[in-house]
Length: 196
Image (cartoon, rainbow, N blue to C red; front, side, top):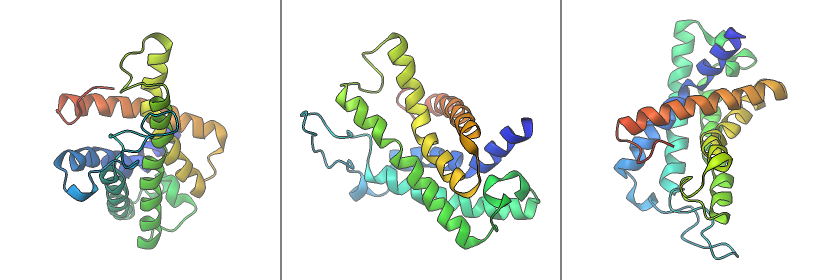
């Protein structure tokens, strides 16, 4: 079990780094033309925004760019360090530049796109950043805010390694807890406006 958890973290090093760098990327507004909401400011049939301002093209581009960059670099580190056997992606697949580019793009898309249903749901319920709610609903949305992207990332891992439903759920839980801890760290570094 300890080895499995270690493998989960080893496999997600590129995505963890991409999430941190994407936060900085979005704050710096490097691509000003892409700092627009994915929903284009449009409303759904209920009159509320589809996803909201926090889901931008800049963020989507950043997730894809950084996941791809770090996946390629991590492939080199794993090959040179001799621990490809600890990365789920390399158990059944060759650690090649082409493979790492494909997986990097998929990880970026999985991360970004799986955040959208949560944003859509929160706009329908008129919830802004888990404020204005309390009790079990608040805990649920704090967890969902951290787990949504992990659902997508773990699904990408499952495409290349047969996780099974139990390991997939464990991946999501561990990923969500890790996401919470990283968000706390980013909050204290003034890279996030709120902790959760």
